[in-house]
Image (tube, rainbow over all chains, first blue to last red):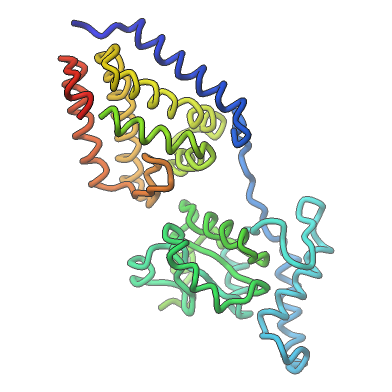
Length: 203
Length: 128
């Protein structure tokens, strides 16, 4: 007996209509056409602010003795950043509205300032090689490993990265951390591949 | 086979956003069609699975399911060759399993079952 193509079509059409109707009436339904989410990139003025803060800290190391150096940097960057960005980036002093992407050069500058780098790849990949002093928080096992973040204050500026520009782990992890309160949140898009190729500090 | 697809469909229908993200992770399709597929595919799985379970149009439903399985498996193989380390999205994200040889092997077993069903239409295999 042959497969009845008409029956197949009827099943496919009925399924499609059911799916569309369910999605239409479902409060958690999604748009029919996905809105491609553009990554917001950090402006160079943001990085300039970071460097200026670094110089300020050098000249006045006792500025805010009760909080750690990266905290001061993050706070000052946010204040300056909110002034230089347009409305779509109009971040509050408590942090950004969403994680902001940075390139290799910007990531290296933030690394030198002392931002915390978080590796979103799996432990096995992290062990093979990672950015020096970075923390491993595998995105796929976020719930299992998120306690790692307990030691890091929410005001801390963080940079998430993964294998390279073709991987989404850093973006996904960054969004998860953002949702639990890490608002000073950057995504280093080039990730491990670019960092290693550039010859920056690894371990 | 019917149970596998019904279970997979319910997980995806309950969180269409996650399934849409899973399809997007494969980086094979333009973003414009991803949500539409995320809405429709789970319902094809659900209805074909239910009809298979009830023994209605067994050959047609197994043909639909087998075609879906072949497409999914090709997508997984392409992604593995491209070095993507992503979640399969096969059963939604709650039971996250990564793409890999194991997943391909599972799919091949299901495809073989589907092909047998499509050819001979055994209701017993449909329920197994």
